[in-house]
Length: 599
Ligand code: G6P
Image (cartoon, rainbow, N blue to C red; front, side):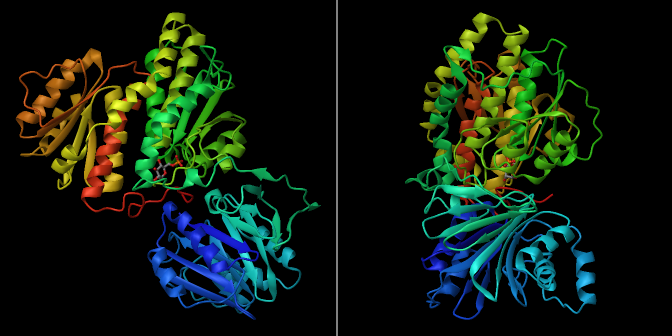
């Protein structure tokens, strides 16, 4: 979604802004623009499409400017064109905005009555007019705008008549101030500041920040705030490709070490450490998330239902955009778990806030430590995955599944449904997880991809946990290769979906669940006898002798607490290879955003 960068210092500002905008590209955008102060006035340059188009426009613009703001836009109000692209200016005010102003129509009418007219269809231009309409001190103008606006915003503002200062404020949309030596930054994303500094301060709701190259002054209603300077834990290398062709490929490869990192964090002397939340005092647990995080949540529910099932705990999962509008009857033993890589997903955040406001205990499984969800949840389990840049999550999902599995294991152990001996075996498997994963990273997935990339429809089938992994596998394929793909419970195939099977329709059957492997195999064969070409992801003990299978990928059979982590790897690679063969933009698929900060 939209991204913001602002800079004041001694460097050439267009260089800093362009580097910042490039590091924000992964969030998804459709146009970009910058505003830089030239001698006496502020010059705004915008372009539709890739950042490269803006870069082209900036060529020959060799101003020595050292202060400016930049923005990547993901259209919400008004179509994608240069006029609607940020920065927006109204008289003395030039600004960039992330978020949505819900009452912008009402504000627009008020401003029109006092003589303002508007060029764009955006809510952001209204903010510029609103700030401009206040006659007086600039900080007061920003506080006035805060009082009038309903909705979410991260704003960086320049005033035409104040040459060396940037102003910033935020509500429900991320924004940090990066602290440098005689230079300062403002950004919606920590990756923007990492090439220059690891020091930053958070901006809280209601604060107004005044930034020059030598100081950062933060005001709240009680006056000047003494802000704590934090240090980012991620390095610039973490946020770069490190020799890989794509971020997605790099991030998939990081899964091998991520499981070791999580083992070291969450296992202590052969036991579940205190860092794994103990949720045994709750009998009513809702796990809420969006996209892949929701599918990870679904694995979590399955594991608790299957292995901790002692009637003392009920687990419900829901997508956040639905959950937030449903009625909930919480008791004093209710817990809401939110799962989010970015920690900024608007619907997930809304659910967290709803639960917090009703005094329900909340736990966040979240990756970005400086995110709003990480700050507002009562309890946080950090995903420790490092920056995830590719829009399609891989290591993020991996970490979410593994952490939910650990929560389920600890819960089962405390409740006695997992014995001491079983716990020992589970922890041993965790310790060896990397060795189970490595062979899956050594398979050449290009053969299978070469058979799939030109297909229009691809179906996944599976039962139990295999079906749940299929949900994520199918999503990965859709997201980055744009092939229509769906997943069905294998047993449901004959109740409708089998009508979709034609000659050569690829059906990918996932069979790693021992108890029902024969049944799953029969379902796959049913599809094949209707003409489907059959692909199998199966554990070693699934007997396929005498069967004609197009391609088969074997995965080791391990405890279901970890099996999904093995099963998803081949599908992440297949989606990646298929997308590459189709010439798709693997890291930045069309229409998608990494962090969906609007409803
Ligand atoms: C977007 C991303 C998905 C992600 C989902 C939830 O749709 O493209 O990859 O799974 O948001 O994101 P979160 O940051 O809350 O995990």
